Length: 390
Image 1 (cartoon, rainbow, N blue to C red):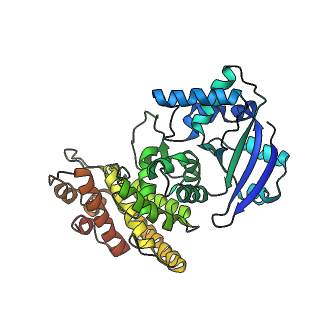
Image 2: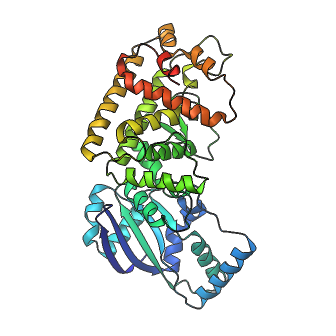
């Protein structure tokens, strides 16, 4: 792969570099061939559109490419380590080429340009010269948080993908960060047939919702509704502009996993209710969302409330210290003593109430329950206090 004519600008606001470059179509297609097969390396990225209008447009694009047209830059996201990031400002073409080529799987994604990439493939197959040039913009950051913030801000006010799809755009890279930050957790991919058998195991798609809930500070994030999506986007911008946002989310996720693993040690002789064994609690996505949203509100305040950064730091330290104490308290309980603390019989009774929108009810219920848990901290005698909080 050979890059040409590099222009480097640094976004000081998000601590992210934008590098505009050129490469041949053949080099570009070789670079992204694996992630293109995996829908751009992006969870939820659009596959090549197949509607009649989209096919007509792409057919015209293929024709234009063969006539040496200049396509809008294709945007690739790149997450690198601290050492490599420090070298980006004065990076040479050769060093940039080496950096891109050595990037770990999952840390390079097609952020914008899936349809153009399909057209390029079709144009080459239809006889276009593979030596034709294509413009590539690399967004390079050491934290995925920087890319997410920039992407959401740039798309606000346009006609963008909804918020969930924007998060899905860079989520494959986020999995790498999560795995490193929370080694106790095991993540199943969307196509993984495995099912949860113990605490600390989660489906990748469910983690997207946890991330949205943490950023939006809501237990219910209805990104299908445009208005709700816009308000959530604004809340998310406020949260992600904080440079510690990703670290806080991973810290919250770590406590969720540790509490889940500790609780999962409990096995009941009765299995006729929804919540019998310890692993059943956080098998429930509403329970996971409820805890994550409760932590986010405790750290950042309720949506619309703008906490000073120093207060956010103090709040996060206090929350994680309290959660660590709670986990230690649960770790020290065994057998029926643990079962009494969990009070699953009361939880099952409370959730037996019929509701027209069960999912929303349970998210709100667990959010109130875990807000009570954070208020009581390590001094809580049992979770019956939580289950009675709603």
